[in-house]
Image (cartoon, rainbow, N blue to C red; front, side, top):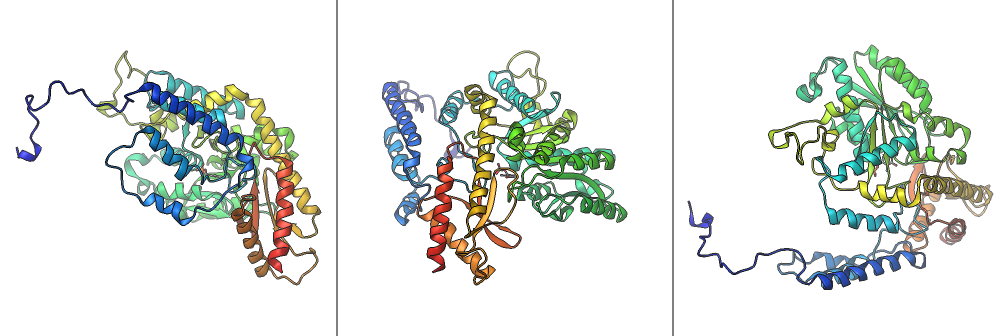
Length: 510
Ligand SMILES: *Cc1c(COP(=O)(O)O)cnc(C)c1O
């Protein structure tokens, strides 16, 4: 043994020295600070409308994050002060009523407090006999109930839609390989007699491709298929692609349907995809990151979307987010799987140190960690459980309907404005449009110029703190994209957006 690894002898340990702990020395002092933090946060949320939606971080504010790791602590009060000065002034903006960028939910005040409760109990929700896994199981059951998914399905809360897609696709892969007589967990994808191929539309979210890549299939194994004018998957093209791949000796195994594409909110013809998958013996995964929740508000939808979202229960696996259109604080998403055995068989491993014993904390037969990637899992279920109790599902349904109605309202404003042009249909809550010149019929500005003008409109809207839409490309054209998953938005906010786009457009074009 070298001196550098010696243990301290009992005599060297001062017998009277109290042990260290990270608990406060003065609980009352921390209690006061905690009360102040709650007051500050509630005030901050209550007054959010009065502040800019977003503001850029000045160089000084960024530089403050270059400081080295603190060797000695400054205490909770000073640490909180650093948060107030360095972090709180520069929010992303998604708590603001005029944030509509990407697909980013708002969160709620009570949801934030629920996260404090979860962090206080601080359980590991991988499994075992304590309340937290029961909370999560109930939340998953409530999700099934809300979406009409079979009660006997399995499910798991995950970090978000990306992980939810990965989990669903992983089960699809092992299910399909097993039908070929291959244990893909042991043999890997190289063990399958023919390369496995999956299918989705070219409007699918990038996390689907990422999942296919991570599963070792390679992005070439994901057929990115054409869409119709309304950006829904061309089912005839899908059928042709499957037939061609079979003829070429490949093994089609999975179709990924979209319930709400990220660009425009398109809902694929899910009933047709479900029927095709049943016929062709393919796994049917649905990415319903935000759009699946629109099933809660059928009356707000057009008949086509209503009918398509009514068959979510037929998906073999369904991915959706609760931090988007259920307004839960980040992060929380969910995967549901119709085939519990295939789900469990994809992930379960029981090493010695996780073996069950009869009785005691570790006596549960199946742990949640056996249904996904992670072993240690946070208590993200609690904010969902509490928020659903706080408001009830019907209130969420009303808010989802309200967002759909607001998107329709914005579409009408755009369609009625001579200087604006809508670039895509608005089936759910996403509006893609652009500034088009003082008069729509004025053809003096070409598309390249318009792309540039609209890019500058977007940046001005954001940098002036007015609103945050994001951008995308629709049929080759730069689009301002408004995705409303925001329970604070009012119609007047959309009026303001239209006014500002018109004013900035005229200003930039001059
Ligand atoms: C946001 C989104 C995802 C990814 O979900 P995250 O929660 O961001 O990981 C996947 N698919 C669609 C359609 C999305 O909108």
